[in-house]
Length: 370
Ligand code: PLP
Figure 1 (cartoon, helix red, strand yellow):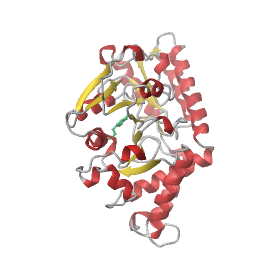
Figure 2: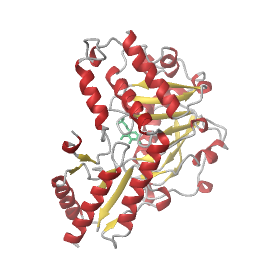
Figure 3: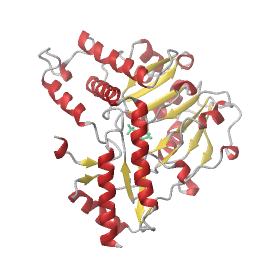
Figure 4: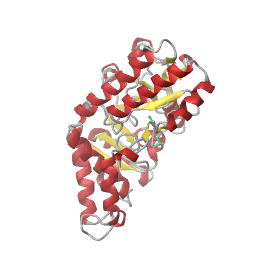
């Protein structure tokens, strides 16, 4: 099966481990001898209860999530939380929320947040085309924000905060820290205790689209507003173990398989090790291509998950690259439609070998098109 698989560098839904797909394929017809498909299990039944508990426990183990945090599985995608978070955490629409805007996704969160709060941009990197991040000393926090929100990895612009260090600056404000980790969740070790709420759409490293994972500190849960519709209500979801209504059962199951796959591979540290090798390989090839390939992102903030690059700023050459790449089984390499260029997403399921194959193709293309 592996040999028939496309080398999929798509940004999401992205590549999944083949072992996970094979197991899902098997259990699609008969889940552990029940005679029922995984998709036919009742969300109130014993079998699904185990699937859900395993997923929660495995996630807790993998990220060493402290017991003071709960894990929620929600629907509506990560975008739903752009509204869902201020709905839950702001007293009313006069509450101020501080947003750090470093790319399209944090900009969307800011815009959507305006429906439910007074959204304040602490820093806006759009004038610098989202290629870098200004030093934190220049950021303008508001006096008493309800919380501060940022996006750890900007999937479209390929810009990522290095590690958890940014939380040191934010925690000095003494308000909750909310982080969108959709596209680098499970790609690096993370100290959850530095955050109050971490959320991630699953369709990059943690499963398939249709499910959003929320890790939330209990002290924050206890402060959520009560007049929030049940499907968006964090404390109701927590009290009901994400089972107040029918959850996306198949999606939770796939997330569970991915978590077990990561554990089998050696855990988060191993993912981090591989991801660093993959990103270093690709960026160093780009930087050493004598300007044929360019990555304009400040090296300090280059994403290990989404490598954005250009070929001589020439869209025709980039189209040709993407078309020829397909002939080499390399797919989904074009940049987001809003920014153009090229983008290679190096999620956990993309192997070091696949990255090396991409680099070999890039080398060949460069020699033929110089
Ligand atoms: N946040 C980030 C960082 C993303 O990359 C995405 C989607 O790619 C989203 C939010 C929105 O996710 P969804 O499409 O699940 O709403």
